[in-house]
Image 1 (cartoon, rainbow, N blue to C red):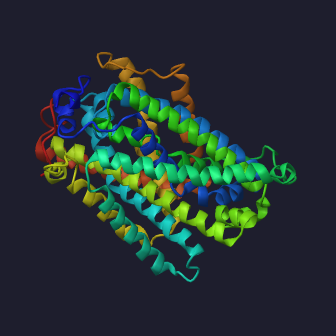
Image 2 (cartoon, rainbow, N blue to C red; image 1 turned 135 degrees about the vertical axis):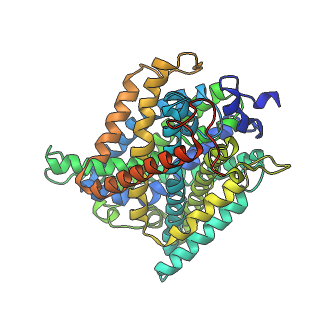
Image 3 (cartoon, rainbow, N blue to C red; image 1 turned 120 degrees about the vertical axis):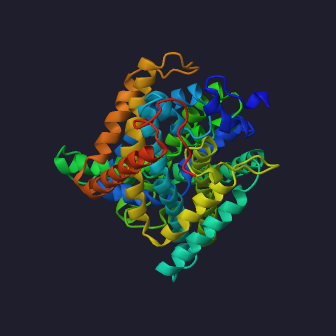
Length: 469
């Protein structure tokens, strides 16, 4: 039991982690992150990114996305190593902004965001799986896509309903399949690449106009969605062995490896398929393999991509379920969410509920789900968390930090600029408005609850909040 206690955390925060098992080593941690990052994203969004900028110069979006993700990953790495408890940012916000006062509000808002974001993220990945299945069933209609996506939610719940050590083994196996698919694409592309085609820039491709920077922001936003997932291991902080070292390593290694894989895959594909064709394709990777090796090989690649998508849903559901579990175990959410399996010692109700909430969203379009997901996270989580790293360094110096980001504060500032840049474009005004409305509703919900349970700022300003139920 001693290995489950995190000495950096106050007892009331370490409590939920004590009920779990630290069964995730470095390999499993990297696997969980990389699976969350890869999923179906790079296989279906290459065309979207090309369309955003109108040519191969869209690779700039991949580069910027990688830069911002590496910098943001360092923020997560420092926070995750310092406070390796289950729930990730749920803990970081409370500790950064004073656990006796404002920390209650910020952690509640993160929990409020999770109630919306978790179903959005899971359903988006499931819809991506169903839409890619069009390769095998081109007659699949909208209702069929939604039904198939909902079935994927159920399947993933079944696969995750088991001890974390077994889940970790599954993640390693899935990662092997995903890497096989990506390496097949990259090696084949390097053999057949046409450099002239890969760099077939249209006239005025690099004219630094307003439309260029808006297009770059759109491409970078999609790229950052594809890189997203490097923070997944922080939600499982209470289940990671030697977290002070393994959490930062898992984050940094996964971002760097995936960035190289994404960039190579994008370049070799547009060096084999004209970018104008790739930009309008819904299954560009399968078509790429089909062009080189025939329809049977394309079918095999499609199967590998579908496995990659399942793996992305797998790790996403795993991470989000731990946030609601942490809040329930601490008494800051419905207590039933804090239940663990009596023998497997893994969260049960939070896992089942997280995936159940995603099912009704499986009938929405993928583009709508992705845009809403990213902007809500930027407003509620990504930007406030960068502020949290400054607050902890300045006001919570008693918290030990086994890992400190390189060249602080440069990475944090770069990440902050990146998130603001991709969010503040005309195309995202509607989603920004939605996020602001959710924020106002979250503030209203917090202060209403705080008055009822007499917590900060209407009552005591110490310890844990009173439970919701």
